[in-house]
Image (tube, rainbow, N blue to C red; front, side):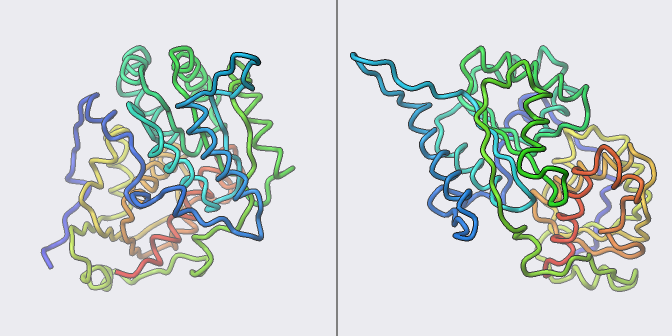
Amino acid sequence: MPAPISLVERRPEASAEQIVAGLTPPPQFDGATFESYRPDPAHPSQAEALERMQELVTAWTSPKRSLFRKAPEVRPGIYLDGGFGVGKTHLLASLWKAMPGPKVFGTFIEYTALVGALGYAETVRALQGSRIVCIDEFELDDPGDTMVMTRLLGELVAGGSKLAATSNTPPNALGEGRFAASDFLREIQAIADRFQIMRIDGDDYRHRDITGHAPVTPDDRIEAELAGLDGTVAVDDFRALVAHLSKVHPSRYVGLVEGLQGLGLRDVEVLHDQNDALRFVALVDRLYDAQVVLRASGTSLDRVFSEEMLGGGYRKKYLRAISRLVALANETA
């Protein structure tokens, strides 16, 4: 195996066109279709969501017209609310594939990063004309970002775009089943009437066959653990990588992990700075999209966020990141 590279040495650049062209479902959903989605019989809401998403493809692309009566109203947006790993992204990717283009698919963080990289007006120009805009993991914990996204989506809907969004509700969230949906409607009040809300229940598939913790690998075993991978492997000091993330715009984290099959992190430690933690969350999303195998020494990756952070306003972001870190750390190299 070639010697590991260092992500700290990568300084990716990308044009507006390249960033927008990259707004597609993550590679692990290449095979995601409505037909390949398997609803859990124990959770009927999954089959209901599947049926509704299929109906929307027809309604949004071939609206029925009647000479005698007005066709029932179909809202231009749908919002899937549910826990971690219940198949929401699979359904969102399936909807995206079934819809004609032009179309875009990205996480909430990717869209807000796009605004940060291009500016608001240029982002609107880049996305205008999209038949559908899919937003995975809609976030409600930053009022500024939510306001920007509400305004952006409002302009896109006014131009004829359809919207589809998902969001995660932690299993122990107060009022689970209604809490996240009501927050969503309140925060996007300017366009709330554009969305149909659907709840999806289920078990987190990422934790069905793995332990709830990310195993710790000794420093001298990290490279050996990743040696079985075919592609590029990187090994970095955790603190150095976190510092490097502050010098790369989150919209370019895709380029940071491009072609990567495995990542070793030495001397992982608990993060206490909120900015460092949020940038690391954005990196974890990109690592998960690319299904990069992780091995790490030091603090277990499921304990990388401090207790104070897990009890704060960004709790949902951190819980999602932990779920993904545990999954990647338990992947076979």
